[in-house]
Image (tube, rainbow, N blue to C red):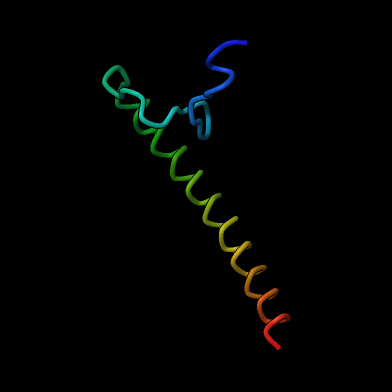
Length: 64
């Protein structure tokens, strides 16, 4: 077994590794990275909103 299998690097959309060096990326690559991260943020916010709504509905049922 490889060490990378035990400790995988955190990944986001389109193979972006969080915390990696940005020095070698071009302006276009940086702009694409920002777009991908913004899309990922929106996806996470939507999931969070759904979970909060589910949590609130469950709390309302058991609060009686």
